[in-house]
Length: 421
Image (cartoon, rainbow, N blue to C red):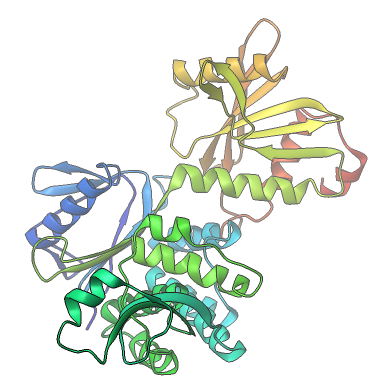
């Protein structure tokens, strides 16, 4: 049976040999996490004495029956794990990294299921849809001994394998059935879910899906396997299932600590997630206005180097505001010198008069500062509350940003946005 999850916030530390709300974090768990971190260039954690210090990566890790949820937190004053768990799930949903159906959403709010279970359930629902629609067949080549000559005879293999058995032929021939690479990948993902869902309500569902799924050959998957996979018109319905399968398979690490532990880690860079969430909400807020919003616009800077601001807002083909999102807490109102230099270069290369360093807040009202003046342009700081009055992730954050920029003159007020104010 699964244990209840250990819940920690980003940048917190877990020490082995201790219990966290009745759940033990052991040295074996520590060693498994350390090995996982080494395989990913030590970007997920920082190893400290007898412990793991988490970085800006949030999400979920499962090691056998132990589950660790790493949650974001925009404010030290709010320690409620339910609030920040729901913030993470909602950000993943809005940026389309997660799909929560109506039934599943009720369970998520009650914390009856883990974040990992949501992905597992999503994947199995996609596979069930494919099974109902009818699984496709594909041509593929197979090289083996057969009793009738068909395809291309492999002379070297035929001589070495069939010197005695004259009735056999070692050939390479085409087969048209359901045992092809796409189904082999989906089957591998189902096997991972079977391993990691034992003790949960999803285990029985996984076994049912496996019974309906055809028997296929085993496959070893890497990132290259997915990169080389080409979908056509017939296989296009498999796209979403394969995306989730990639996430599950490439983050699964069986026997990572030279023991019996099996691990799956689904971790997301909170800086990137915050940037994507703001971009999505700004684009939504600027529909039917004269504002255009783009993300990750690139310009050559020096040699092979390029500049790429997070978000650019234009009006009438004129760059109005450049936004650089920062998922961190800033002490006072003093950004780093490097951040200010970066904003200066952005303003200069995009001919923008205004740039903003956007930080998250949670308990205070939005705080705006514009103390940094350059010769022809300026840079400001905006701490924006990510939560609404109900303590949930604010879905109007894009509209509030537009209102704030219009209020301080960064944007020329658009008649189409007056209904938002």
